[in-house]
Image (cartoon, rainbow, N blue to C red):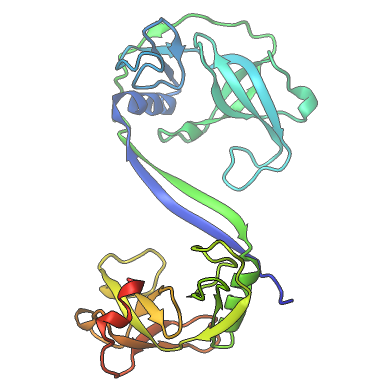
Length: 315
């Protein structure tokens, strides 16, 4: 049996959003070392503040200031912090009900060991040295045993100089991908400049890339079939926006290609032809680069275009 492949993968992108008057006031307040909540219709103070009442869905605008001290309501120990987390040393994730608030705020607690953390312990905010108007302006919480609770809640206009109106938050997911047996064989065949699919024993369709089972019949597919290398463009799109970290000049064409002998179109870039001359039915072949594990792109073969009836079921 061939080796099942694995590879580390990262999905990462910046997420940009506008904030509105409530979230904007909350983050601007953190920059100014002020914690704002909002009073709900039933009188509860919600921290972090929300724009709409969680019970009635009414719009909320009654901002109030609460204390930077509070009480841990529950916690979990994090022995191995990951990149981008609040602290680089082991810490506790805690839900803290700030004095004056009726809901809890999630953040990190700087503690030497899990034995030093308990539900009901008193904590206070440790402010970041440099604050920009983000939740990270709270560097973490720290123990504040002996400090009495302050239940004084002060109305606040939510107005600050140079208010924060939007944020850009990085989103990142690190994981290890295992393609399974069928796709591992497909990837290993590509390294030999071959394209291999699998045939369904019931409907006899050949699927590329293989999935290990027929998506139509639901039965396992074990028979390997080499397809291509030539194929036919079934549909395509012209890309006009340059992707980050992708060294391809726009505009370029990305197409679905039905390889000869396959019953499922795969997608790939089309090169070697002006983008405005790519068309449905265009016959293409793969172009490999030295050391690559998959074709860099597909180019025209010079053959006559395929008849529409030969690929219409693969569109």
